[in-house]
Length: 373
Image 1 (cartoon, rainbow, N blue to C red):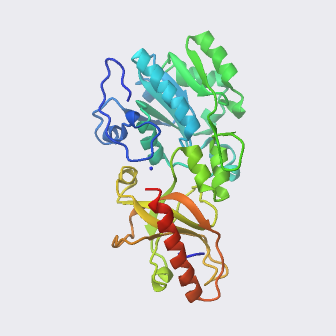
Image 2: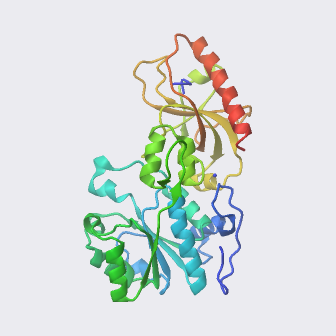
Image 3: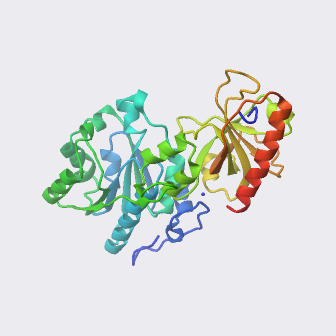
């Protein structure tokens, strides 16, 4: 361990578009504040529907909507292409854009030991999707019953008996139904049979350092993060990778070394490879406030196991704030936006050697962040 711890509206549908401070792909589509006002007050047309089986709540959906279905973990550039096209089609038809997703990830129900870590927790996912202009987000609670429906039964229950969409928009690798047995060809045939159009979006190609063009995907991003390649992950995401959690008390070793840190314990999240990173933090009292925070603070991050002090220490995720007194950070929500990898973890012979290296790491982080604000 190192320390011993970022709408286009239809003709008749006017929406105010408050500024989004995340690194969004299209600021003109930002409606971030609207989604939280509906969660709190229910006074706008943006809706969040959370349901286990769906039919009663789903009947509230607007008929003839434009619909897209998927897990959307990461809300990466490929997802953004799908949603932007769906938003455009909804505006052309003067209809709503409805997005249907699952919580938790279906693999967590069907094969828990192989469940992938989460790139984007649900609160952040709601925020990002609202930035892209989604009118209604349907969150289906993953269950054996839903996940074991045949493709035909899934379409019958969640499309034909609820929204009856005019258009469905999906990526070319979309699968649905029992055992992922449904694909875009089957969905196209069902659409022709039951009266909705399917629009297929090709994958988003990106260029990574030293690599040939590759397709942005959640699987790719997880792989990159596990290798500490946060710059490449940001290329696929369209923004810096964000890891967040509630701050927890540490053992004070960082403060003793002259570099106090804030520790977080992310739950079921993808944690980048062990190492030292430059990045920005956001601090707030709640997850919702964290999504909309404007206080981007330069920091140095460490992910590791404090081997200089203890040979078998649990993994620590910590942030040292650079040149700023933030006061007591315990029991706050803290987000870490990863900008650049600095170095791998190493064991030092003494606390003094560790302290000297931390000083070098912090200086390097300052230099990196000065050109990435």
